[in-house]
Length: 452
Image (tube, rainbow, N blue to C red; front, side, top):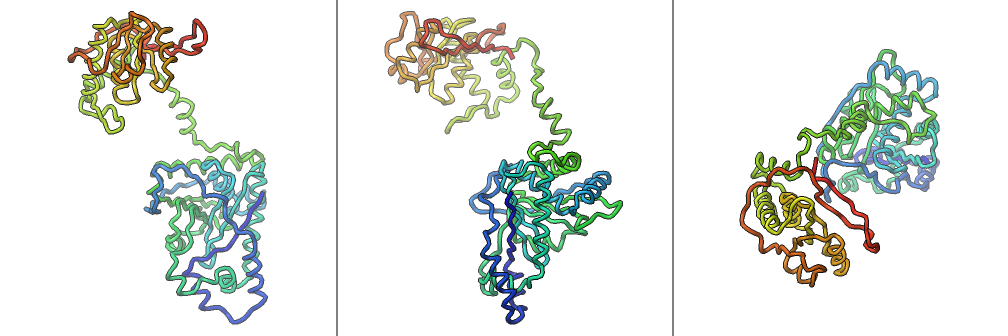
């Protein structure tokens, strides 16, 4: 695993430090210059975090905050775990945050900024790709943090001059300061001071663990404070992230030997929703209700609500139902009914939806025909299906040419009859039939029922 760090300074802090710089310390300046020559702690790509709202071309920031309390029992478990593993709460919580970000983004290369003691920001990059267990990850994070603390013997003013020679007062006025996507810190008290100092960073996420700088007092309770960009994330998403962090932390404390990819992050409610809620396919419409009847009921309840949007065309439930009724009446006059097939050769427009719904209202079953298919394939599909009616547009019908059997009729879209009545109740039946394996004489057929 490769874990690198680099100290970056906001221009305002750099300017103040440069003004107070002591004269000439060649050894210190050489040490700082050596660090500048190290490979930068920059992730290969930004974290691809899933957002609720699209990221705009021009970065926007609307700050909001969610909080959570870990509870006395979990806080006590954190204290015991840190003592046993020889790490601080900062190291443990940072490792958990790294895992959570990696799981959310699907990326192993994670960059997190953490505020330092001089108004600077420590860039902590963690590559989790070569890490097996959470315990191994935690050890690497511990080594990284200890390296950061070991560098405090270098004068900060000299570090600024060597790392950021352009950070003069004039440069500070020109530059808005570094930008951070994700920030993390632990604090003993309220986060107001660092929050104001880092406001210019405008992060997507800023997680603070309040009450855990280096140790947790007996009886203390850890609290989490998540600042987030409300232009990207909804409040519910921020709350879910805090819940996932708490679940992941609890799992890591119990089984640090497990692979970090396998540690559970779902809360009990999320797991229940995933396993049961999303798989609850029960229907409240009653047995034997057909799809087009459900649509008609919806059209009666919300006739003026938009039901279909295709390109520049929008149809309300009333308009869509009326157009389907008109075509259904025409189809019934042409003999379409139960177990009778109607080919539908239409472009992907609103008319395609009208045609499919009309076939269902007429009581028939449709054979979907894609205009992009070669002409000979379309003719073969019509021949094999023995469709009684072809619903299409005049231009598509002319391209198709002669039909395979003499008994098939065309129902041109422009020759639809006048408005009809609502479809009568019918028992469930086959509503569509797709044909595959056209090379064979008797191709397999896939059927779909109209019953819900």
